[in-house]
Length: 316
Image (tube, rainbow, N blue to C red; front, side, top):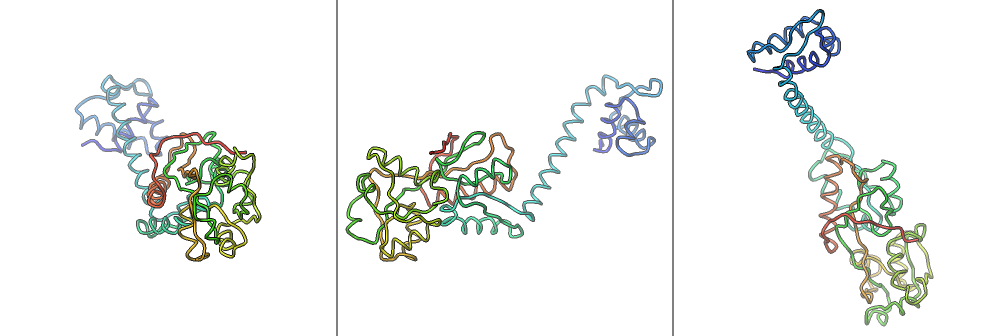
């Protein structure tokens, strides 16, 4: 029977043309390497090396065996790495990027999905805004993330759209919810919008700017805040109206602004959610797991789209 130890000694001897050099590389005694070669030759019934001076020369049989031996040892190494990856996945830390709004109504469920499979892991869900998370991806602090398009700088990135979420208009004034809100009405509405730090690149604001392009105006914000929860609370108090993803409205209105409601925009507007990672990256099992679970979670909440590579641009 051929052993991995025998093949390891064979390849080292083949590469160095010397039993002594092979033994030094492997950290074995030279007689041990010689014994492994003799045992391999006996098991195969062939001669693999001829002694020439202080070295050895491979035979044609050895030339034939070499690529097969390399393939066997490479497969064993891959198997070991796969086992180590699974072990690390079961006991290590999993980090995944997700922007604020998506994390609001999918984050806890996503973490629960992970822990139900791997109760021994530590989970980090990282990020507030897609631009911030994209920078973490670019610097290698994260392997993958679920982000909002179009505020992802796609240079050097693979962007795979997986779902889209309708943007809706929310208000505590029933008279403003009797019909879909047009660009003209939106341009005149006093709004509270979140993501004020990222206002130049926020995906929702970018969509609204595009919608209002024909009016020659930008969304008129009466109030600027950082988080969507505060925006919804202010809507409930009657200080302003807002535009938020439908999933956020369905979750937050009953809790933070029960007297408020929502209506569609005309034409309907959408945020697109995408899986993003560095182009050409070989993703770890942990990253692939998070992509799988985050995609399922987002597609259960928002409207699924067929994942396919896309180029995203930054709305200036």
